[in-house]
Length: 200
Image 1 (cartoon, rainbow, N blue to C red):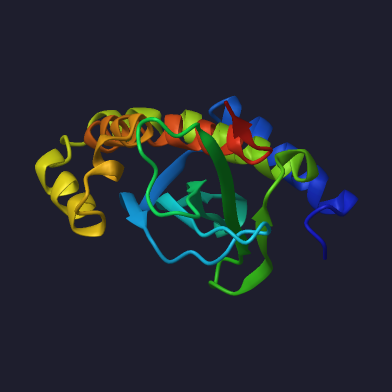
Image 2 (image 1 turned 30 degrees about the horizontal axis):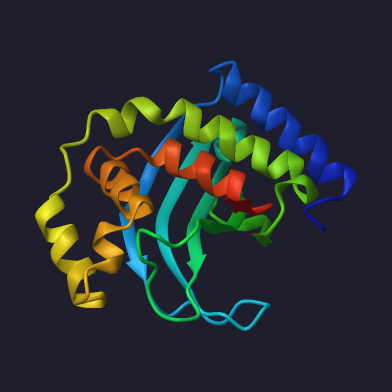
């Protein structure tokens, strides 16, 4: 069944409403903090794109022992046809989200599964609304996590770009702040904003 079918849309609306009301509680099962990806393929205009990315898996328990899983991969990239951007380059950000939604029976069997690439959230309003609600509900979990190691993050960026252009870019400084304080919801909201393109 397609993710945009009326049946799934209604189900997503119900799950989202229950999440917002606090009737459905989500756990964070897997969390890979913001990382930098240098081999994400070629964009439609021929430019390569460097990406900061976040990986998460959420789970909620439904009635009758059933569970719902939401696996989230989100990335925010900037086209860089001549290498890494310098602070003088204009900002051109592109967001990409890949969500896997699974409903499992009490015995662990898959009742429904859909993997969806989101390049424009307007095409997947219900699924993106669920993701918004889940990130909103789990913000407290990430706030309690210890801060991440910024020097290690900078060393990794330097290994990707010895010239320092990547490390000093204003957008990278924002990503460092998100990384340090586990600001997953803010990363999510920015990625969502960038799915339709963010340009200066």
